[in-house]
Image (cartoon, rainbow, N blue to C red; front, side, top):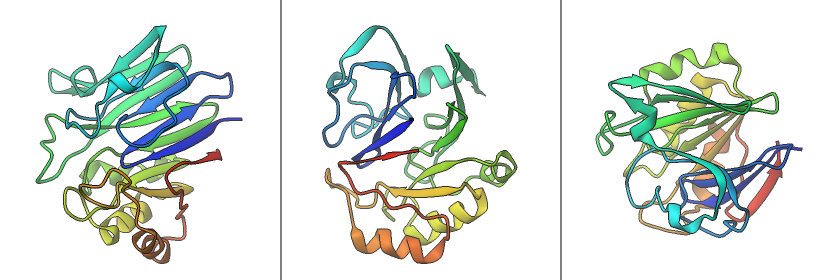
Length: 200
């Protein structure tokens, strides 16, 4: 069974059905004990790129915004059946030329890791893709606020929308109040507190 462990802030870990391990934007929390097969970095801010927390398997691949957005083109990758597609991310605090989000496809699931962003024009095309999970930031300072994140969730129309990165400048980065407010604004809301793992 595919699992997602939310470490906190913008950091999470996906464990595929075959045991392969993917880390996205390592920085916060624990759960770095499993050696990585794949590491995805959405941008180079220090709170999203702490690769040193992770033990990499000899065959581990690291994909950052540099590889994902090369020559002005958003690239796609196929790592032994795990597909990773870079998509647009950015806002007034995050240059879209230096940031990406990812759509990760594995085990019959599509997971959208938005990275640090506000609403993008590309999001309007995501509903047709019938995504399973969308992880959306909502701190309201570096990124969009919870209201805009919920509006994006409704636009994207993934089966489950997970609010993350809810408190600026906080490693623990969790606000039950903001998460619950998000849940009142979108029927797809799925609340995962830091340190919790779910089956996808």
